[in-house]
Length: 219
Image (cartoon, rainbow, N blue to C red; front, side, top):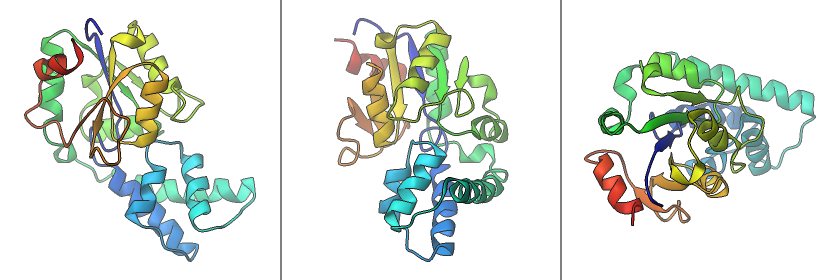
């Protein structure tokens, strides 16, 4: 890679910890369906679409429903999730995120949000971050779920940047695979034992800046 021209961010677990609200809503649904759903199980639901998440959840519970019934279950889960996120505040932005994005702006780097969530704009409005992104691609603008690279490729296209000059920031296995499928460089936010395929893994954006990013990716 010769240069970094754009950074593409997932939302859940990268910008804010909405993953905990997804987990609470899915766990609530699992309890209603009379089976246990653990935080470890929740890893299978990160970074993918709502219906794929539901299919994974039902697989854990060894349950089967018609498509009509599944749509009702997904709506119920989303209703609970929206209840949680409408109480969010800017204080829930993860440590170091704003500072890092500001270093990108200072270096004239394009910035995109690429999320499977259909509630991404609602969340960004809640945390006052709508104006931080040049492009926002969410679950209302794409058809394919990660690990399909559609959401990242569409972000790069709207930014006008070739995929090889993009770096993706993701916390989910499916998201890292989507970045790989898009032929983009990637940074995993989390732990290397889970994000085994990530180019680089870090716990958070705290004390991380654009110069450090360049040192890792520009050889």
